[in-house]
Length: 118
Length: 112
Image (cartoon, rainbow over the protein chains, first blue to last red):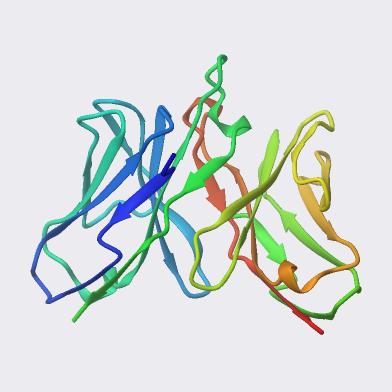
């Protein structure tokens, strides 16, 4: 099993350009998450999904959009990149359990995408 | 709502012990702990549940004080491999989303 994979690993954008980050998991997990990590800030949740076709906002959603058309994929889009979006982006997935209590189960993280916006 | 971790950084010699604390301003029913090595993804260590149940690592222990809304991670007889940044995560919102709000992290450096 590959676990959680992310593409691309690195990307440099100019201000105003757009791009999509792809996250894929092969563990049949219902829940998926997008985080950004900045020095000294920890991991901040951007958007998340509790199932195919559903998405919801996290702590820092502005400037990002997401889609979950297939259970195994979770896409993060930047429509008009800004220098403030320079960060390392991590995707994660988790299993909700039979009772649907997702916070009782670990999150599996992808290797990350390092994005620089000039 | 972000949990607060202390200390921010710790430097140890191999074999020494360390405690990392995680405090929340809201009532907790579970706390997650993750470790991230430089340039890598966070990796799950353990989950502490209300009532004392603990799931995860067999060499690192932790406690969960529901009254104080606090969890502590105990790293005993630390090894070089323990170096990294430790994050606690607490549930954000309802339990059925799996959302976590992470602390700012505690950097641990273990020297030979």
